[in-house]
Image (cartoon, rainbow, N blue to C red; front, top):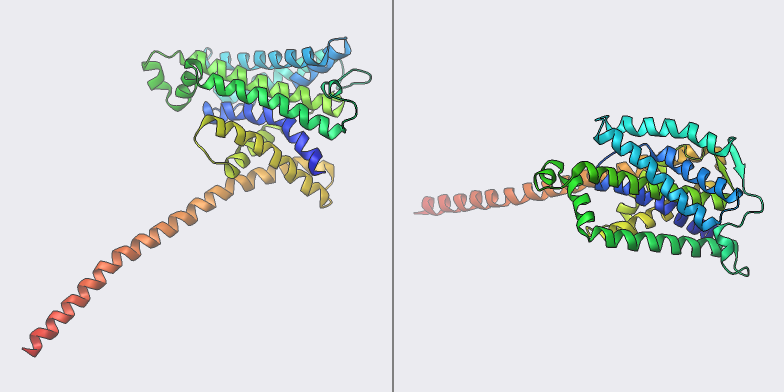
Length: 316
């Protein structure tokens, strides 16, 4: 069960990295996630049914997600629609698009060859999933790490940190935001394509709650792996996605029905949000207590010294 969760976590890791780009790098709450995830799955599965290879279908799914992010970015930057509403509009539109692509609400993969089948046949399915996940996430992390070291990546991070200052330094902030939306949703759609191949089907409702899953993975990763370097932060997203799947598996092993997965996801998100807040409050109280104790010590010494001086004068 742990091995299976590890493989599933790796397949969901691109989703966590995609959410990380908009939520942490650009500081934008993007709800396009819930539309681009099934969009990638719908495109990939439909192409595979029509005879395309799983690799080509997955790449096209990634590009489809980039297109969805591009639309949200244009709505946000060029039409000045608030980012939250822009994401909702794209997500809503993608529901109909996904239905047109699939033709029905659920499309199964029957005899089509998925990505894991390109690996040795004598390997267990869970091992195949883990190896596939490691290959995909390794490529994603290395490409993003290299990109964030270039002027393009630095401009993207600068735009997220301070948009006004970035614009004053000649950075095309609107272009950077659109680019961030596109890369983010491309990775989310890629995750959808991988999960659809793992599950053996694409479903119109598979995107429901994915923003919660992505945010929970991001926050869990930041709790378990702290660091300011971009490589550490990207790896933290992968760790967060794996730990999140392990937490869900542990909850399922305790007897929770599969129908409760969404509410369990919400509860996990609430916990990982509250834990850092509680830790900061405890740390602040300890620091305040220590500071007050240090302030009291000189006062006590001054009182003792004054009393001793008065005693000596009285003897004289």
